[in-house]
Length: 166
Image: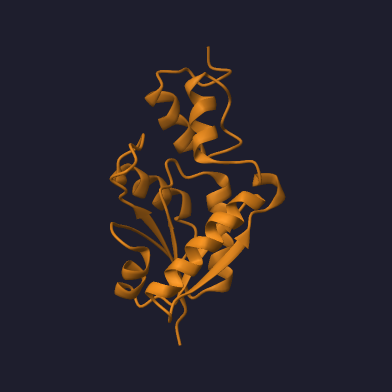
């Protein structure tokens, strides 16, 4: 039986913390689908297509990763992909509280789909996409937080010169 895991999120932008979870998921599951959520409640910096491209470039070295997008309920998307696992990364205790509540809710919607939590590696425990965007907006260095191609896109969005390139 092929085990497919869905790693849903906004990934605006993808960070090294996200990539840590993706790389570890590739060791645990036969297929990992990184699913970019089209959330009408949010106004992302990057389009869905840009986020998909950023993730594809960042994961091209991984053979069992696919990148896709979806809207609607995550469990419905998982069903459409024949996935039995939803993968969620945890950084801090507050993430766990929110994610556990969501896992319980998803279980009421689809009893056959399990949620698996992966704790982020300690070096990424502080990292979030919103923090990365804020640092980039004010001209700070983000090359140690996101892939290089993503850092360049962020600097372009905020009309910033990458630190050290003045």
